[in-house]
Amino acid sequence: MSLRRFLPDNFTLCLIATVITASVLPCRGNAAHAFEWLTNLAIALLFFLHGAKLSREAVVAGITHWRLHLVVLTSTFVLFPVLGVLLKPVLSPLVTPALYVGILFLCTLPSTVQSSIAFTSIARGNVPAAVCSASASSLIGIVVTPLLTGLVVQTQGQGGMSWHSVGDIVLQLFVPFVAGQIAQRWIGGWVQRHRPLIGLVDQGSILLVVYTAFSAAVLQGLWKQLPLPVLGGLLVVNAILLAAALLITRYGARALGFKREDEITIVFCGSKKSLASGVPMANVLFPAHALGMIVLPLMLFHQMQLMTCAVLARRYARRKDVTQRYTSSNEVATAE
Image (tube, rainbow, N blue to C red):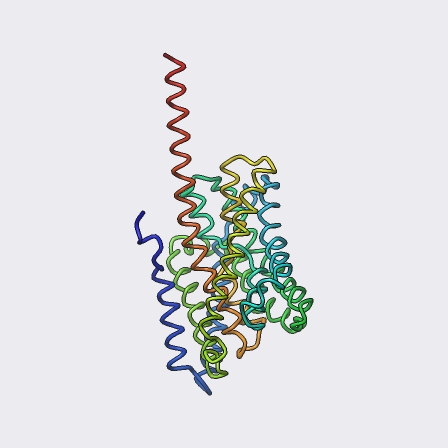
């Protein structure tokens, strides 16, 4: 097995470089205000472009497989928050209270879109259903994630989410997304032809949020509050959550009688969390000085899910090849 599969991608390396830069050269004063304004603008542009890109036809075409979509959405918005709350007595001693708020926030996020579809395709699963489920999760998450965050964080005694935060979500995320959907008939084709532009805005907005978040956190003494044993504990917590989600979605899909192609879609769409949606939402929902601790669990979970799912997708694909060869051999033997 090639070691290249386990190496971080270029974007992850950029994230690491951004954290290092913020640790050494944190922005402050007027520069911090300028970065905050630029970040908000980039996030609004990001959700506008996603609204212009998301095909309503693809969602309508795939929505007929309602049982699969219901399982994926249940895993994303019910299973994960329940795991985060129920496992808190066991997992919270491994990290700081602030980091566990980040874990709870991670549990409320929607699934990824691009990587869920890509891994489903590699594993030879139900790609049209993956497109529909991942897109629906991303869209529903704009509304559901802030509400779940307020509910889960508040019930854990960490404070709730104000109506002002809800208004900020609507203004900064939902309104640009709806504007993009409205503008789709005029600019949708152009956006599809320039998909790298969305990737650039996507990654650029995340890097901006990470830089401003970690700058504020470093000025508040982030690294003094985060010794290596706590960072190791955070890796363990993320690994437990990811393993639990993968196992439950896999065996749950089989128990519910889904075909192998649908099982693959459920596993890859129902076990992932979106860095692209999570970082902008955290920027709106939480104060600047707390953002570093909030997004750190998500950043680590993002890389862990990519590496783990890359291995799983290839294993699914190899099993598919073996099954097809075995079936073909039996057909030949029967014919003879």
